Image (cartoon, rainbow, N blue to C red; front, side, top):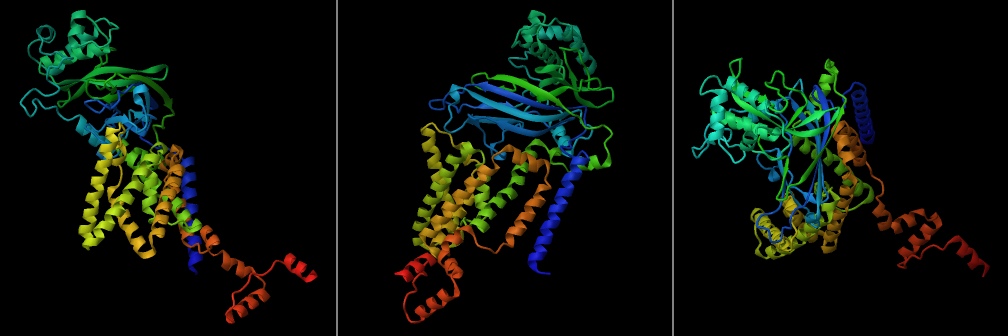
Length: 578
């Protein structure tokens, strides 16, 4: 069997298998096969506000957004952000502690001081019946026993008095002694505190502290939760305010606060026990399944120097059947949606890389565009698939390669070894990027979102490739390859910029089988490239000439005379008439 036929059969087999898996997934309910739970929701958080300009500010103005943790029995998936005015560093380089927080800054060229909008959308399964191992690990981290003291010997976060939770004030201590007594079981004290605070009248007064709620003899969910936490901490019971969202199919979603205290339960073990002093729920056994945890500390979902305006939207999605079949359990186990949010974000980037290589292969094999390998334009296109970042990103890339090329020409005089020379190049490129960073910061443009992501190692490799190609084929060829790399990167960024592309491959990873089949077929292509039609135009025209003209041209070349182009038939007839 010939190699071409073997390649064609292999590609056909991959396509058939991919289509079969796709159809089977669709027909057996394997699409978005996440954990089975009580309810599935799509939640959108819209944040609006104004950020002061960075010029003249002591600290870089930023917006802090809290996302829900993927833990306990709430599974978060299909996370996306959208903003025309703000950007954030991606990957672990841009992560902050805790990992559910993200910092957003002004996008280069944008003016968030005139107003910004950030939309954060995600899907969540509440009451998941089969939590994943990643969810269990995160639960173990967030629900760990609270420390009684910190490194400085002061009370821990869940026991100390704060300006919002004044657990050390005499009024709070007197009330705690009156309601809960001076000793006894912490769980019983916690229950008595909860019953007392829940019985207080509801007052629609925003921003209340624990002391305000005590003095006004009532409060909203914020004030009541802080008062309950203050009473618990005064008696030595670790407690914390929980910020979340109440999801109801018959009402719009609302931000809500409740309390969790670390007490010994009837089963004998210590754990965080929830209590809602606003609606009266107490204990995990009867806890409502429509409470979505956003953060396990007192504070806002979104915070900035100027308090932003937060709007919530939610819609309930069809739930997975409780009695799932083995096939559905299999799809749930292999689905990328079962990964934690951080891993999902990485997976969405990885599944796009083969698609980017298809675009690069088409330009290399069918069109004949010269690039610096396959990985470089594919990665550049993926990094700048947000088209708002494309001009700045490619500008930094081109400038860095050209400046690195000049550095490389200077280093060539020293005749250094390969490894030290590459290390010197890396150092010089970093110095150049630091100069760019300082210059743009003085001009009021923040490029940290790009430089944090940008693969500096690939930039160093690009400079070496540029210099090697120049030494082998000349300056013109190296600049042509640089131009081709930039052009193909732009096409990759434009082709993969729609979120629907990444969402499709993320939901149906069997699409990569079709991608692999296309790449195999491209690997066996031996025809003309589009650029070769122009490059070898004379050869192609000579091949299409009649045999008599070819023989005459060969005879003239044998006699040392240049061959003249054959006259067109109409011109030949006019010459005969004359």
